[in-house]
Image 1 (spheres, rainbow, N blue to C red):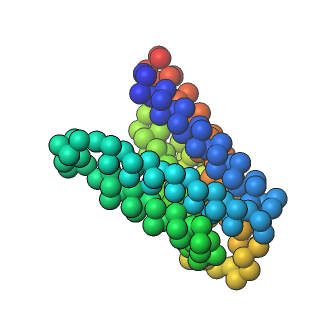
Image 2 (image 1 turned 135 degrees about the vertical axis):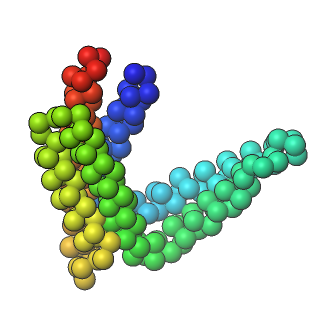
Length: 183
């Protein structure tokens, strides 16, 4: 039960973050993507520095078969792109977000099938919502919009819907588990 609770908590936090990010992109589309990219660049830079410092502070035998230095250098490289070429990074964000949403939707399709196997009456609603977000993810992946502001607003809408559907899905799924297993 503890594992289910941790999973539920993590899923709720991620869903709320998706909703907040989506609303931010809808309200401030011109400003948001570059700012978020630079903020992520700073966070990635700090993660990279920590990894490199941890690597050099450890004993040589502790570092065997650990990838702290490599991870740190990769994080530093990514941070450099985010901080010094944010427009280039922003241009691939729709594709990355589309892929993330599509993968998440596929996982929720599986969740829908599991709800059906648990004989839940409204399993099909979870499936429809997962298919809806899969379509949104696919649209982002293939980037059908030319204007960056329109695209940013669309990304915000897709993230908000995806976060809300995830939030609904995890609450519905945990209710189904509790009902099935009397937890």
